[in-house]
Image (cartoon, rainbow, N blue to C red):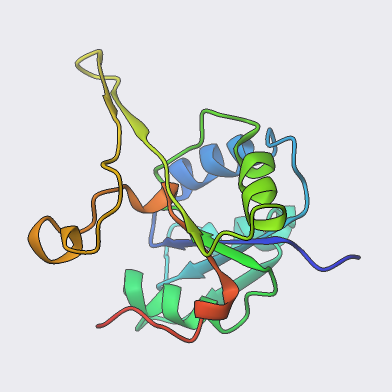
Length: 166
């Protein structure tokens, strides 16, 4: 198997139903050269057993002491892709060409990071809201915080030694 271009991390804990939806969603990506790593914080709802039985992901990292950011940090050590991103188990990509676009910009344009807008759908109240990110300015990290949603952010693996501050 060739080395994956994209490494995608999903932290999870007892969210098997949403995780199943995410896995189904990721299969629809037209770009297949990616690995999916699950960082499970000790699920008791059958998550790990389901993942192992269905061979749905490339790697499963489990530990009862993993919170979301500890899990991502631990998973970063096993990422093999040149591009890294993470998506929570209750999120999905509605653009099935998304990974293809990410691959283009990192391979051809030599990007260090990339982020995009996103849509939030509240199915219960039938509300959709689209968020368009601001053009990046470093001062925003201090004044506004992260101006984009985490699952729309991908970064070059040369930064994988930079861990989330716990």
